[in-house]
Image (tube, rainbow, N blue to C red; front, side, top):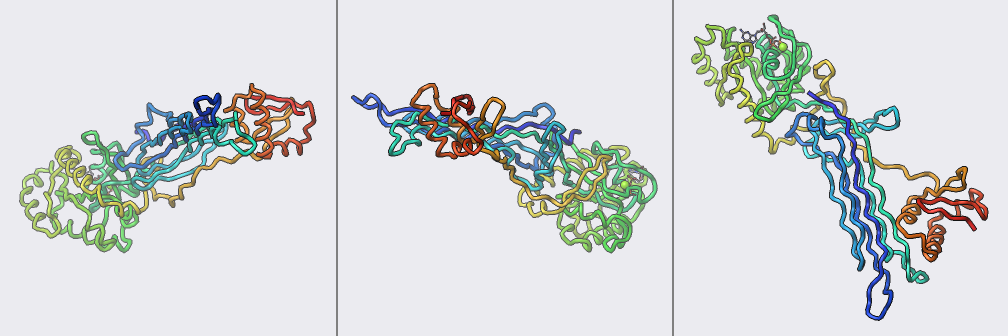
Length: 442
Ligand SMILES: Nc1nc2c(ncn2[C@@H]2O[C@H](COP(=O)(O)OP(=O)(O)OP(=O)(O)O)[C@@H](O)[C@H]2O)c(=O)[nH]1
Ligand SMILES: [Mg+2]
């Protein structure tokens, strides 16, 4: 199972502004009417609790949002590029990779269903020539190119969040069940407290997946810290469904059920409000099979056990389909209105397959690109203008025309570029490069 992915996201470029003039009868060239370009589409990550893996990124790793459309004539603005949403599982941590060494920085943590994170901002549209009209400039021949969309390399890491919790006394077979239902390989042994740390596993059923968590066995007094399980009960708090596993081979199923439920309730009464599937394990043992209907009757008589009692054998792998049906059905029933549950701590899947507490959830940090510090710099051939607006203007205009060049120099003055060049010590005859355009300073 893939639980990390490296992807490239590119927001859409802004559409270029247009140079156009109104067509009027008997007027060779009407007023300027070039519209602005549309904004490039933004790129978002959106968390969805319907998926539990990053498998979708195995084949598709590059994502591009649509560009904004060029401005039209008659002052018509170009259409904005559509927002692009990449769906990721809830529990996805987002790192930005930068530099040749791809050093990583955590930029977000999607822990809630429907949470959105802007990862690459669409480029602004360029202004059309109609926007450059002033009292002295009646016939602007300038327009801005659209801004580039942001591009980022991201590393996604899935911090699994458990959907279903397995609880029960030590030795009930919780780890055996997790091993039988999922890809996990927890340790199984015939002594109590085999499991010392919670384990997570992804359970697949009819094209759906959910994450199950196996926690150490609970014993009487667990809520006060006796045994091990209490430490991990908080992982069960955020699950939607509890699978309560009872060892059928040990007798007194009702007493065992009560012990655990009393611990759950004392730890946090909300745990008892969760749908609970009561499952009797080890039905492969002949005595258990023999007593099946009696055990079932006793358990059904218990308050709180409204649902069917299931009989399975984790080791013999019987009854598992019925259990999966119940798990997915109850889980899906909780999908709506369960948002309060999401506020609980997430659980981290460690490299060795065990689960640790989720780290504190960092606030989503909006990604902002720094503007270049200087409007222009000196190069070995002369001067290079970096001012983003000026560069876009040079790119979006047809500067082969002498009139356009005059207007462009005017704009450089207005944008403060001229002043920067003077401060850098520019002299008459020096070469200035700006976007695709080069000119000689006078
Ligand atoms: N006969 C039989 N034995 C089982 C079954 N499931 C589990 N066992 C055995 O029961 C013992 C305990 O199983 P585990 O899966 O380690 O139980 P656990 O609930 O995880 O136990 P702790 O981690 O100690 O809380 C092991 O010896 C298993 O082989 C089953 O379906 N039938
Ligand atoms: Mg175990």
